[in-house]
Length: 486
Ligand SMILES: *Cc1c(COP(=O)(O)O)cnc(C)c1O
Ligand code: SF4
Image 1 (cartoon, rainbow, N blue to C red):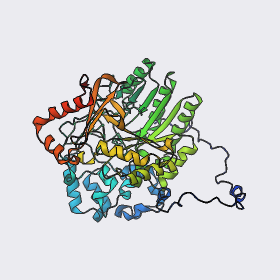
Image 2 (image 1 turned 90 degrees about the horizontal axis):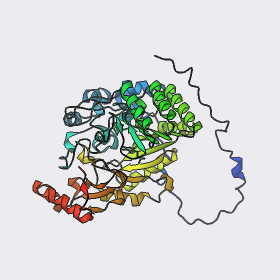
Image 3 (image 1 turned 60 degrees about the vertical axis):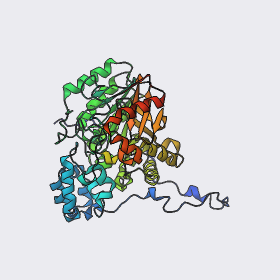
Image 4 (image 1 turned 180 degrees about the horizontal axis):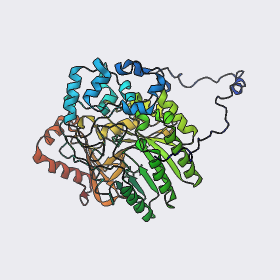
């Protein structure tokens, strides 16, 4: 093992006082306050500022005796992660009923993703009501909630493998690429778009597998270096949180050395899963900050893209970790997936957006849920997303208002969810164009069938109607001369 600390220096913060100078406010004490135009905000309106600070994990039987120091150690979080129903029982004991554990076992047999949930997340689940809990919904499958797949669904619906010049590198857009360095994450999300690759084989899916491989990485770097039009690299799941500091350095130092690379994003679910890594894995943190600083000196951006979906993923530990990144000049943006019963109401989405903004995490995207195997009950309709956007825009600063996008099946890339050429809320079909990806194609998305009105459900239940439904949508969009992407 190469010792890294000698080359990585502890970052320093400029000599700025920790607290604001209250005396400044004394100057305002004599002023007659102008009459208010708006009603004063209630406690409820300001609840995005509440960050749970108690030792919440002590409610979990196996963590009753775990002190702050131990819980804050990312290695503890890794070692005690739940990776099977038996491990869950071992940790939460009677908090999970035998019925729930059986339901989860059956759910796992049919799931395309393995299970991995950190003690942090396990402790944030409401075990009095796990079925409705937004974290349980994201990470622990249960058979009883399962819905039949949509007939138009395929594995790798985004055609990532089709758009890969070399394994683990997706080149879809003209000036940006997606690099997948690993096949492991600090958590496995049931709804992962990359269930074709991430997290080890399951009963359902034999994975492509993107392990750390110097040869594979070098091929990806050489391709990027050979294409002068590429300015932007997204380093995504498998997760940057799982990169050893030396590998993080390898990726960032190589990419920053390529003259035409201007922007590098490290995408990670880590801050939502084990935020304490920022405080306890100083080697990883210092490596990150060092290369962010190095990039800045070169006039290039290296930033972090997080993946918070629920306000319940956020505690005071998260707040402190995100502020630590902010103080060290690491730009953080967030990409959420829109998930039924997790964040699909205006109240929850507004709360999430305001909480993120309060921690200096900029809400960037909210994704329409991809058409992924085994998670039909998690998807929502395009119509719901459009309505949700109306209720979020205007609630806070425009630059902290996420763009609601649909990463359309068939590899069309991300489209503003409003920008469809056609949408039929009865059949649930929406049609998009993506001229920067392929001008000749139309891209279709399909709402989950169980949310359609009866007429739509009846039509989809008859297989002989399916082609007609798609033809109708193409005709209705006025794009009949384009080819529907498959
Ligand atoms: C999302 C994505 C990107 C980055 O897109 P932005 O809209 O710039 O965030 C790049 N390549 C692929 C294949 C992607 O899926
Ligand atoms: S963290 Fe990202 S890549 Fe990993 S399982 Fe979740 S969605 Fe997939």
